[in-house]
Length: 107
Image 1 (tube, helix red, strand yellow):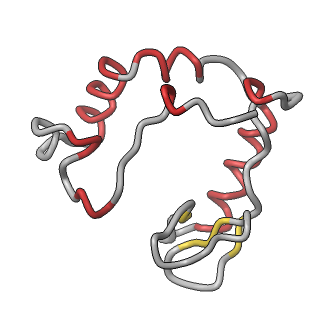
Image 2 (cartoon, rainbow, N blue to C red):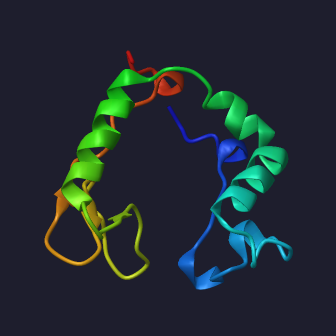
């Protein structure tokens, strides 16, 4: 299934505090940014509502592998990704997440 880019919120670290190209979010804390995201991307939030236990299990494993201070990298401009995710700060490799229910997965 092709990506539905209407249901994508795109951000790059090169935008720094200008999250999702918003001029009014630079000084938001995590909670404030979450509230703006829910208000401005309500379709994305609605599409993601519900239980997805396969993804939840993958997410828990990703948190375990990146604990205590690494983050997963899903895309980099300067590197071809092989389907796996890399993590900041080392040689951590994370398998890709399972397909979601909307993309034909059986979560």
